[in-house]
Image (cartoon, rainbow, N blue to C red; front, top):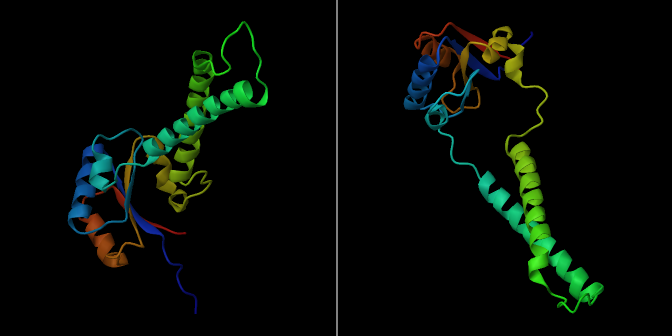
Length: 179
């Protein structure tokens, strides 16, 4: 007795972005919450329709920049005032105007690194393979087709009911995504 492998999700294919937006809206109105959409171009309003919340990335970048500011200024202060004070031309050891360029550069450097690392972490990247790549038609997601995915972990997911619901949205096709 062989059992059919549990599917990852169902994938519906649409021809234009308006159909995709309407399909996402209908799925959300019917109670589906574990949705994702794939598009070859940015679709205005799609993230809001999917229920995506604002990201925490700006906070991560701010604290990365703040860390860079403190690290850059702190290092210069430590070197110039504490570890190796040199009296050059009678200027004070703690000459803060001289510290500004390096402080600015370390702020930008740390903010940029925290932006890249934070984006990769929040997007769970790198992800060399995703189950939707098992569907042959998905290769058109980067060309001219729009896809709506309903994951099997959704509380309302029932293979036949969800398939019937997706087919009622008039897609070009509905495909099972195997893990």
